Amino acid sequence: MLEGMLLLLLALGGGKTGSPAAAIATVATPDAVVGVWCGTWATTGADRAVPIEAIITSPAKDGQVLALFATGEGRTRRMTRVSGRLESDGARFAMPGGGSLRLAAGSPSRLVGIVKAAGPESPVPGDGTLELARVRR
Image (cartoon, rainbow, N blue to C red; front, side, top):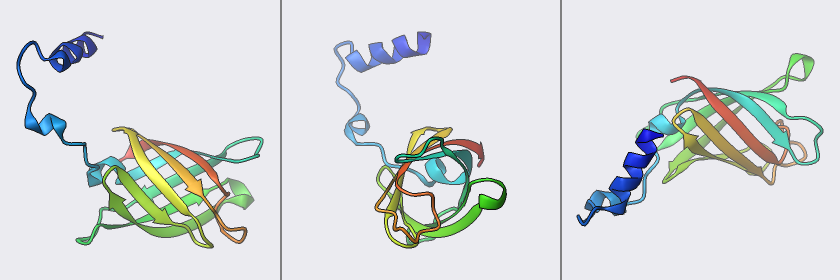
C-alpha cells in the first residue's frame, strides 16, 4: 500500500515536469510472454474452463515466437504448435484451422488472452479467453 501511495505522489508531479520516457507507451518485451505458463481456457458457451499449459519460446531475430499449447486433460488432451509475432503490447498467434490468439501481459506473472474466429476443425477448444500464470521463465 505504501508503494502505491508513493507512486501516486510521484505521478502527481510535485511541481516537477515528468520524464520524457514516461510519456512513451510501454512496449512488450520478450520477457513478458516468454516462458512456461499454466491456466484455463474458457470457451464461449462451455460449462467449465479447459485446463491449458503453454510454452512460449524466445523470439527469433525477426520477432517470431513459437508456442506449444496443451489443452484438456486425460484422453481429451491435445497439443498444438503455433507461430506468432511479438507486438507492441503482447503477442499474436495464428491458430490452425483459422482464427487468432492474442496474448497480453496482465502482470509480470500473468497472461490474458483472447481467441477469435477459431475454425470448427481447429484442434483448440474454441473462441474464448485464457488466463495463464507463469510457472517458469
